[in-house]
Image (cartoon, rainbow, N blue to C red; front, side):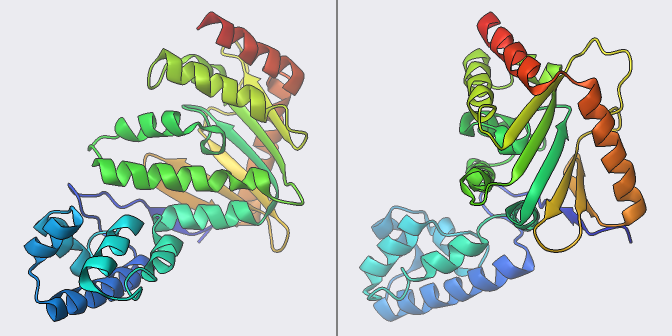
Length: 285
């Protein structure tokens, strides 16, 4: 196979179908929560009432079907007199709380010495503001529940720690002009997103380019993708369509993506021209 494929799990109203690593942690937390609750002589409804959650939410946590928030574990620990034994699970949950697809992508990005990305439909995830990301997830169909949306937004924002890494990785992005003009989330969300691009574009290790809509020759019509060159190991590619993502490691396919990205960058505005263009679009909002 050319690479590994991952599918983002759809979530129900307030539960989700966790991946294997997350499932093991949630089942462990659920078992301990149930033992401490039973030891305290409380029903699920009584515990829920004491900590500000519903009986259904407590049941979902105990069954390993719901990711408990830190405040849930803190309050349950206090009410059940667990002396920190429930609260200490916060760190374990935090490590695996994000979807497997996001964790896999974050690991690739975290090890990247160089990263290049072409985005055709919306602002790339590493460039998004929190409110822009939240607006994108709220547009999903079938609809996502609010808890899942916040989980995904937090995961996307966590990936942006790449800007704090030292030594700093070399990052380049090519954005379609339409992604700057489409007012996803509303005009003010778009304006603040454009301002974010202008700030990130000033970083010495980051180059942002704009692909104008009026280009008569365009090498990126196959869709968005990303190239990652790690500090250790071989270069890989990453493509995503709908909610399916694929990591590409086969050299022949990688050479095609590398050539394609080089042509896309040549066809786009230069970084300096692009920042001026983004400033112009921001002024029009």
